[in-house]
Length: 346
Image 1: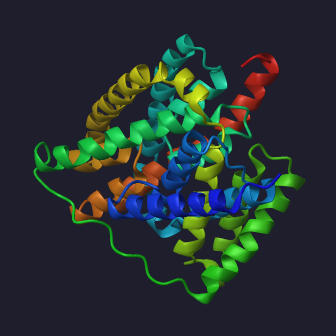
Image 2: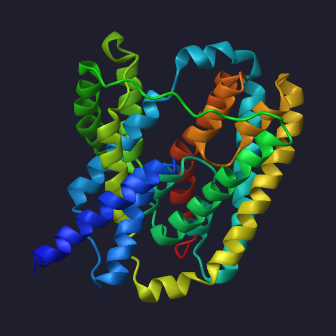
């Protein structure tokens, strides 16, 4: 039975208000977090969970995968080719450290798959999107991932103003989407879904669109394409709504016990990544600030803006962050799939 009209209207109002608020305060992935907040709010206030249709959810994930592909700047990668050994080493090390830290969540009744995805550094929105496909509890993943992002975002301005004696002025505003950008999205979403299905990829919508988008970016008409901001925001909103659909008073009560340990692991992970940044900066010859931004375990848009505004090596920062993100997207699903076969309960 469909919900009463007033509930639909109220959900739309809450969603619009939450999205506007998240953009106003420059929250990380504002549309996704707004969708998550909306879904949880409706479950708590209206006692009704919002269900996102599967085709909409899959399409949103495909758009996200295509968006990640547009961040792969081949020119930027080429300019730091001599530093790639250090990039791969630090990306691997931060993933291993994060997964090790995440094992603390196992003491609170969380499955191994959920603990790994909740703790692994990468794009919080991307990891959240693939969590359901990999058998993880999206509720736990989104809470732990975004708690860590909040820790990164809150501490970064303090570090910039004190330890690194600088400040950020914010990222540049994205240019309006062109015709090729819209064509790119029209092609990458269904193409990614088809590719993911044909190749039987793990997390097929995201990974399939990532591969399809990378192939499209090699063609001259799409080499500089970006996902139109409106489409990207709509996709992240849908993913956020889906991520929060399992929340209600009971589940929030169940997850309350996770918050202290999630906060502790988030703070420790940020501190450990900062320690890793010291030898990384010395190895690559960049500033301590760029080393820290390159190894930061969350808040990709913010750390890139900080690097650009400080006149740092934004290419190295972006390459290091994206190498780690691609490793999480392409390798982690395969590792977890193999692990589940050996450990059915994980």
